Image (cartoon, rainbow, N blue to C red; front, side, top):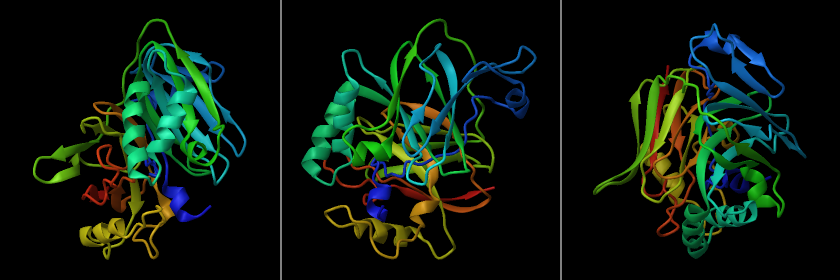
Length: 314
C-alpha cells in the first residue's frame, strides 16, 4: 500500500487516524482489578473506579467485537495482527441512518475531490457522530474511552472504508442503565478554529508516556483527528507547512516527508463538540501532532491551513 493511501482515512483520516492508550480505567489499580466477563470487562468492587472494557480485535480479514453493552464510560481495548489493518473507529448512527449511508458519506470526506468532500461532510453530520478510535500497529495495542449513550453504534476500520465496497465492521447496541467513570488525563489536546488565524491544536497540561490524553474537537461542523509522529530537531513548523502544501491534487503523498508514515499513533476523528480519552504507546520525545482531514467547507487539508503542532512527550 502506498504512503498516500496509508494516510487517507476517513478522517481524512489518514489521517492517520491516529491515537494514545485509553484504558477506561483511571488508575493502574483499576486495570489490574478488571474481571473478564466474556469479551467485556468490569472492574471489581474493590477498585477505585468502575468501567467497562470491550475488546476489539482486527486481523487481515476480520473485526471481532462484542455485540452489546450498557451506557456510560466505556473503554475499547484495540489490537491488530495485520500491518494493513488497525485504524479502528467508533461512530454512533443517528436515528434512521444505516451503516451503508454512513459509510458512503465518510468515504466522500476522504476523497481528493473538494466537491465530494463538502457534500460528504454535510451528509456525515446528518447520519452519524464520529466518536474517535485509535491508530495502532501489530504488537502495539491502544485504548480509547468514550461515554456511550443508548443507541446503535458501529466499530469499523477506516482503511477498509477507503479501499473496499464492503468494509469490515461490527455493530454495537447500547441499552440499559448508565454507570462508570472516565479516566483522568494528564493533558488535554483541543482542536479549534482561532479567529483571524485558522484551525489550530492547543495543548493544556503535559502529555506523558503511558498516560491517558483527552482530545476535544471544538471546530464547528468539522470532524478532526490528531496523530502523533516522532520527529527530530530538524522538523520545524515551516517544514510541516511546506509538507502539507506539497500534496498533489490527486492526494499523492509528497516525497521525502518530515515524518515516517508508518510511525503514527493517535486518535481517530471526532465530530464537532465531541471528546474522547485515548492512550497509545508513545515514548518520551519530540512529536509532530498532525491531521490529514480536509475542511468541510472547501475540501482543503486542515494541515495546509496551519493545523499542526510540535510537542514534547515526557
